[in-house]
Image (cartoon, rainbow, N blue to C red; front, side, top):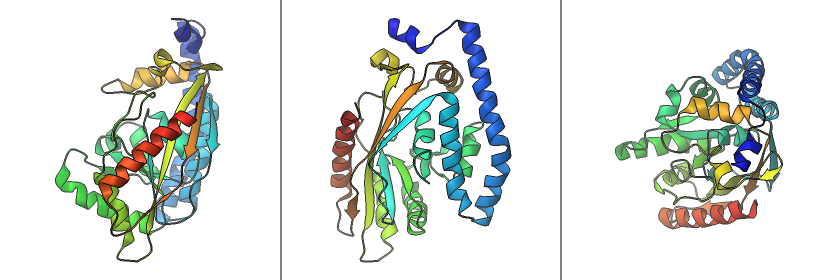
Length: 270
C-alpha cells in the first residue's frame, strides 16, 4: 500500500487537476502539429520522420517521464527493431528515441486519439489473429524497410507485466526476409529492451508496475489517468547489437536469440 501511495501523491481532487492540466498541455502541443504532420506525411517530407520525435519528447516532459537511453540505433539499413512491450506508454518512450514507425495490431487504428497519432507516425496495422494475412503484412513491412524506414516490432505480440519478457513470436520476422528484396546484402534486426525502473524516485516493485503495465482487457481511460496523475516515472531504454538477416537465416532460431537478448537487456536496465 505504501508504494501505491507514493506513486499517487495528493487526494482525488489534486490528482484530477493534475491529469486535466497534463491533458490540456498535450492537446495544446498536438493541435498545431497534427495538420503539419499530416501534410508532411502526404508530401513525404523528411519532417514526417523528425516531427514525431519532437512531439514524443515534449509529451514525456509534460507527463513527467524521464528517459535514459543506453546504446544507439544501428545506422545500417534495412533495420527491423524488436522490443519487449509493457504499456501504451512504450510508443511515446520509443518514439522519443529516434525516427521510428511501429507495427501495431489492427485495433489500434480505431482507438480515439491514439489511433490518429499512430497513423500520423506511419504505423503499419496488422491482423495478428489472421495467419493467412501474415504474408501480406510482411510484404508491406518489408517495403517500408527497403525504403529506409526503421520499424519497431513488439516481439511478444502483446503487453507483458513489466517484470518478465514473454516468448517472442517469429511470424513477423519474415518481414526482414522480405526486406532483402533478392539482394545479397543482409537486412538487420536489432533487439531493444525498455524497463520502467523508478517512480517518484523509488524503485518500482511488482505492485507499482501494475499501475504502468497495460495488460489484457484493462480499460485505457482509467489507466491513462493513473499515469497522468501519478508521480514521475524513470524509464531505461537499452539498445542491443543488431543481428544480420540473410536468405538462409532460420526465423525461429533468430526469434529465440532475440528473446534471450531482450530478456538480458531488460535485466541490465535495473
